[in-house]
Image (cartoon, rainbow, N blue to C red; front, side, top):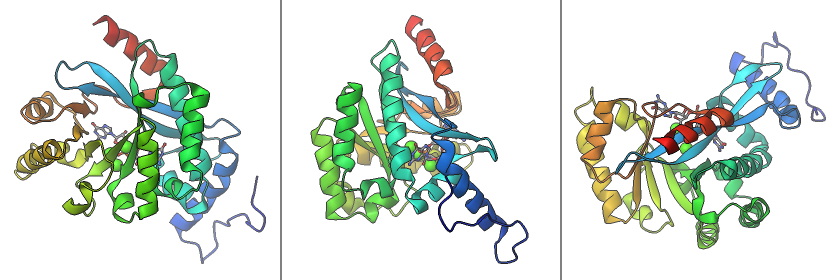
Length: 275
Ligand code: C2E
Ligand code: CA
Ligand code: CA
Ligand code: CA
């Protein structure tokens, strides 16, 4: 439904830049997209580095809009945050990804991205608890991902909510680690179970001589703090072989699989099981 007072953006309005115009279009289309079932949750496999077995997936939103075509999360998440729609959308992703993962024939984990704005909701703790109860998904198989920026700007209130959710058995991963303002001091004070190293570090291993020593240092840090380490952006055998020399437990990237629709991921799981 169109919001009251939200006039149709006009393409030739000289006061609207091209990106502003696009944002307004996305904002308007997003309102109906959930009801019209235009959103989908795709899954990207995560593997353990000990035996390379499949351990779970990351849930990633996809939106095929009737009016705008394929819109990627890098574009629409920010807009959903600015309008507050992310709270509704985030709850939907959580529910759908737990339901989907339960239908799979293995006890896989699922990692769901949580936006900083969702964490400001007074009901986030009870929402997560309710969704776990309603879906019957084991809390120990649910991981929630927050980015560094969110934590850095975080308040005592945020940390308390994180602790409440962790107390319920859910784990927390720090997403895109290394790209924000990594203040080492705050790391030990937060209820973080896993560091997810940003894909940019893995991806530039072959071109940037600094990438390897940085990854070594991050892996020592994770080990020292007793956190699980997952590296993203694993695209080649070379990447994998390097990560095996680190204290890195898990990997995610195109080498294993790109994000895929649920049905395709179910087939992937079947294949991995029979291997
Ligand atoms: P992210 O959480 O860092 O997600 C990982 C992104 O890296 C995904 O992009 C994935 O497709 C991509 N990727 C994975 N493996 C590789 C690889 O080997 N090489 C390369 N080059 N890229 C790889 P995607 O799906 O476009 O998601 C972009 C961002 O959108 C996510 O970054 C996340 O911050 C946000 N996002 C996606 N779904 C949700 C959601 O449900 N809620 C919230 N709050 N944010 C979401
Ligand atoms: Ca993520
Ligand atoms: Ca990431
Ligand atoms: Ca990212």
